[in-house]
Length: 394
Ligand code: LMR
Image 1 (cartoon, rainbow, N blue to C red):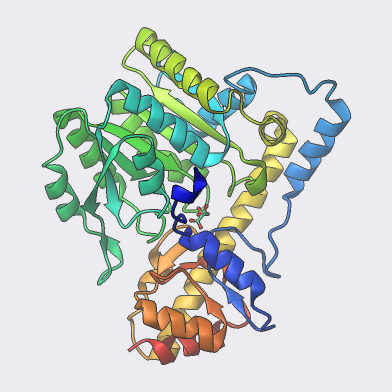
Image 2: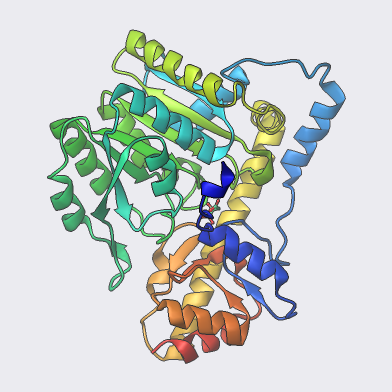
């Protein structure tokens, strides 16, 4: 049977990660995959997470099954940090998922059960795995203009104009904060306009929320999503703990749904749990149990928040320093937008050939669309890096 198959195309981000690992140059720079790195280039286990994991090892008495929803306390705590009090508890349901991608997948399959083949509108550009993931669930991906590379801002008028073509029952995928790959986020006024549009046209907002706490802060980053949640009848959210708890390989996430009322929320949630049962039955427990302990204990939670804040401010500082280095190297304001964008990513605006030259001749790795991981920037080598980038940028 397998002889009938063709090789699957490689995922660009994961292929670049492998290519970087194989590169033997000692001065190579990894600005590829979206993992946070400290000033030494290491992705360490957070202090609060290590302490929570230690506690789990000491206290856990069984590895027996937990259940379809996963760890209920983890779900409640995730509901709190994402939604705050934007929606009444009676309309919100949360289920643990294997990472943000797992949450996206199960929500997409659930939504596709409600409306098979529904159109889902994605920003152009978006995370490259969105189309295979959402399309694979049966949804029909379409794109709306999003990013203005000339200004580094959101092309909001064009976005709204295109979404004018959306029909009732279509789904609107939004990045909750720290847009991947552009770093260009919606303003609160734009979230308000999107909320009005969803209500006028009957669109279902589907928020991918993978970088909470990496933009302007835990509360600030959730403000747009909460505004939307407070005003639309229905909504779904895929939240990831990979980045903000640095538990990447543990695969920790949460799938959330808001129903028009408690009965409809229960019905949709029963469908969501039946999706998980038909794919992987129950989510992995370990990582979510660690996150739960870190959020439950006031001291660990305070420490986690402090650690997250220092990651965030390091990235904000790197953005400013890198924009300044590029300004000096290029003698222009061409790259100034980097200082104002949010989260882990920005796009430099280079061609794939220029990106290839940086990789081959300078050992500088970034995604082919010139997306860079801000956390991978070498704090003490920004001038050299900026000179190399300017040397290839026409
Ligand atoms: C990224 O965009 O680099 C991350 O979300 C990692 C991934 O799985 O692609």
